[in-house]
Length: 501
Image 1 (tube, rainbow, N blue to C red):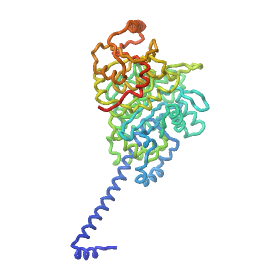
Image 2: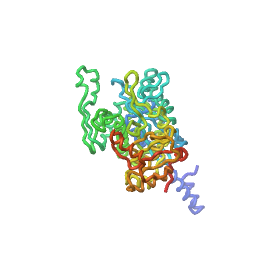
Image 3: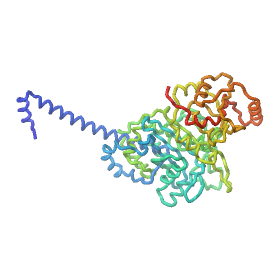
């Protein structure tokens, strides 16, 4: 080993060149050591951030919650440097799918029914995020039970084997949506409230004033006085600070007046809260708040089920942490006009939602193509004119109209309705311009993307149909364009191009 005296002699003999090189190597070692320390601290911050973001949306996934015990947590840090270059599940295929589930939890009526079901997809190349919410009343095939509401799967699995619910739901939905679901995360109401409170609350822009006179009070489900089971929930439109309890009420409310009074509106509110939590985490200096980290880890250990490993959370957070809100795609599977679901009643009298065409093909198409975004220039041009589009399937090809709607929505078209045309023998697609030339940019893009010819006049049969619709109040919003799809659309559908300009 070379000591300092030896180095002095070497310096005399060699003009100091060797010593200079030695000092440079010594400084380099120190820099690398400091770099490793900073990297470890970055991992610590990242782990805390991903935990906060992923878990506070009250949507979760996993079967083994031992990941959150302090010993297990700390023991995995030594592996982070070695595993940080490993691929996440789905990363090699360009898409990471995470199923987020929310349940009421113990001591709640129906505590293991899934109150929130959301598929979060991440594009590892771009960091884009897609949030796809499914209603709890959607019926799906469940092994051993036939077709049942999707929110039953977790409860059935937990009844057979505690801790297996997240895996069971992810496997069932993977079959229904025809996509691999790589991770799952399930959280209950208690963790949702506690973690948001630990964060110091969040701020949400309430899009519509929310008035709910029938918000359920926990623990009063069996009160003989019906009125005592509910409280009045009121939130004004605009930015509102929310603690954990209020945020939970905001995402759970189902009986509000007006547009907010549905499961679908609730799904949109859940997506907003998820984004707000992510923003709050980014604004906190987590590294310098060890008590906050400890409190959250304790909550997660008790109330979270997931199949994530620590390094996987670290890497996923690294992919999504800088994603801006405008790169987050949000979709809610609903029964709106032109939606993919329809209402139904079972022979036993229960309300359910089922696919409009009798199978899940349209839903699968939407999920698989959720990242197929349109070029920004074309999207901007259409949105400036905000054209309403009605699509009619003029063929016997099942689902062709809805697939076209899914693609054209990405260009900014507001699809006012999708249904079969009165005749279904069209060979060529045709566009009827009811704006009479006022929205030419949108018309040009619609023509380009569909390959349809434009008809500037309205035939008598179409005029008669529009008149009948107005009299029956079938469609109160007159579209700017009516697109009737012909058989040629089946060849161009592959299809609606997304070339950058």
